[in-house]
Length: 336
Length: 274
Image (cartoon, rainbow over all chains, first blue to last red; front, side, top):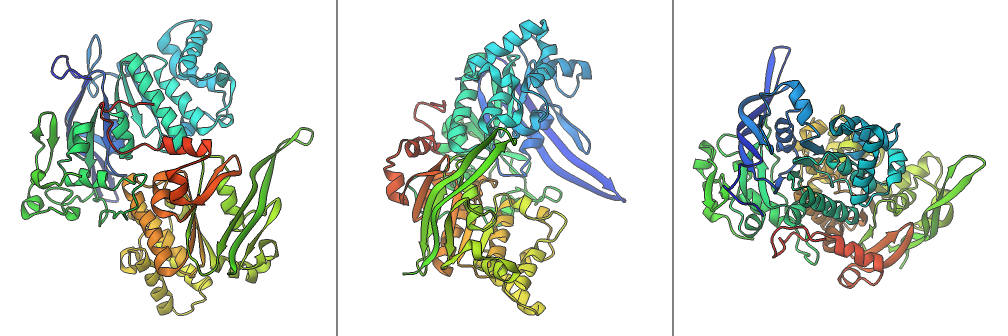
């Protein structure tokens, strides 16, 4: 559990605004993928980030990791990591320092394990490419460290000699987790690491992420659109809609009493074993971020929308200790 | 009652290795299944990756021939379905829905073209007005309308909408059987339940039988009449969906059921308990 206010948060994102800006044949387009996002991740916690496709989750993560390439641009705000011995403003450090931070202090578990591992080289090479420089030992010692780490994650050492296609999807995803944690990073970003896996494998992979996190004491941002995963894994939860953070709080509080109509919908839409009632999706489509709706971006699909919601952007306000939401009608959101 | 689909002891072998060291591997091993005419139902085939669910679907769609056993659709052995006319006639009656709607549609083509082409070739319509009316009817069956998708490219629609269009396309030829291979695994969790409810509604309203392939027990429970649990090519347990899932007998079925993450936060905090 986290001690709020006791130590500096592991990650502070404030007023972050990142747009995709293109200009072709004199037509300017601006896709507001991340707009005014404020969030803090405390040391040692798993922070969940939820929301449907194209709501800006991955852009937010790319901006946090400073993996920014045109046409993505950061217009405002800052991303500050508090590592054990120093503070890093991700958008103000040089390339060399960034290279030292990446993987050693800040690592990334990606969604498609097949895209991370080179299909024509043995898994061993991936470990050498990613981690050899950071660990800074001789080759033999390095391979010992990797072997011991794989053993901790219940992977046989001979996966190092396998090609990615010889491993099953679950094994490959375990290898990418091993790859991301071999340098014992202080902060791990996990972008939909279990979405492509089936339920049995998913459960094993989640248990593994959880035990590695508890062992290393790392802080984690865990991104997925599957609310059932959040319910079982994360300590705190942030919900994104249309490029903005719309609700944030302790996962248990958010599930018990959602304060944003979108969150309430996400929770209600989950299929449950034993439940046979037909489920309705939201009407309408997710907002076009190149031309977002005025006011609250959720208002065209919201059952509680009023004139105020169409005119003004609701600010993030605290509705209960540690529970914030951006909704003018947060009292009227029915508990599930 | 006559059979709509009879799958009778079907196996499919794939071989690997080279000429000297050839290994055979059964992707599907002795599977039987029967669907009756005039009694529309949703049969769920569930299992982990590599359990042979997709191979079974491809055999039912007559895309791969079985290595052993027979599949008969309305009494005709699928091996006899040869030649353009017979194949078209078969495709008119059995239609697929694929896993990833973003891959099923060419990103450079407008999605309405798929509907129109299916109406022209499968439903045998010739005039533009009739084709559009048929496309609109199919789209209304899935909760959309032609006005919403006309001239749209795949990237302009959300994953859920695009999967609805894919289902509408399959409905244009008024099939008797839909084979849906993991139709919800690539779309947002919040949209899955509504797509699955849609399949249920179609089965009830239009009388189409559906073979629903998935690894997600939660949606399978809410939608299916019968369920078949597969592992390593074999059926390990089958029967009425509620009965099987409420009280699974086989060890593997129990494992599958216990792996479903409940959307409730455990009372001892959000810690993952494995």
